[in-house]
Image 1: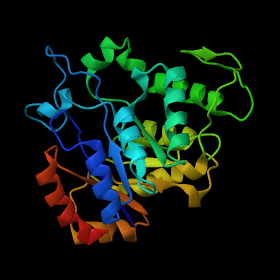
Image 2: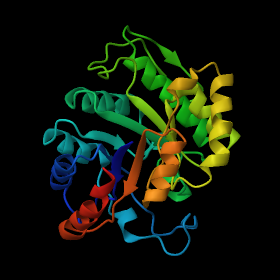
Image 3: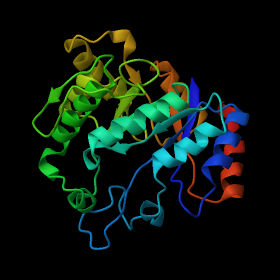
Image 4: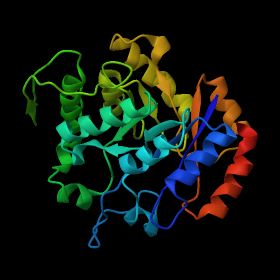
Amino acid sequence: MRISTTIFLTDETITPVRLARELEERGFAGLYLPEHTHIPVERTTPYPAGGELPPEYGRTLDPFVALAQAAAVTTTLGLGTGITLLAQHDPIALAKQIATLDHLSGGRFTLGVGFGWNKEEAADHGVDWATRRELSLDRMRLMRALWAAEPTAYKGDFGSVRASYAYPKPSSGGAPRVLVGGAAGPKLFSHIADYADGWMPIGGRGLTESVPVLRDAWEKAGRDPGTLQIVPYAVLPSPGKLAHYAELGFEEVVLQLPPEGEAPVLRVLDAYAEYV
């Protein structure tokens, strides 16, 4: 099982360059970064984990810029978002960013997408909260049109693009690997079966019950059962937990690193190295 990591990189933490080098030297499989453009001070949306919102949420580095730095100083380390708030982006510009990063990194990019939890942040981007999932699906389809081998037009409920020349293309052809984050449920599993390569369940709890449901939705959508990827995300590891994931057939897990400076992060990496 591949062991990857995630961290809230900020202006106060270890740098992307130092972290990426240390991860690759230790044999870790990948680095996934979260996204928040801003956190409105006047906020009524509660923090999903309860309590006060940790300060790193308002200091998060742009994941694509940080991952570009990581790509430049590594050769094998996987690079991903966990997650990109797709509804908050212009899909034409985002398609170009994603394809460029995937091309320049030699096909190492994984696009983790999600729907967010902060209503105020989304509202500042002009997102109608009630339709954010449908908007995200529409934007994914538009991006896939731009990534197609031949100029392909797309017209959806929320956006459109003319048949266009749009290079570079993602290295693997068609799209980079796409994983959808979020809590288990019929709507989420429908999205995964529609346009993704798999699921990024946060924390990895309750998977014994939910994985068979997702696999059923996947097969009913006509997808190849052997291609579904499930990647538990932001996991605090233990030998028993990782053994359970292996028994469920998972090939990758993403471990949570603390949003700290160089020394504390490297100590945690040394502790996690036993799982690599």
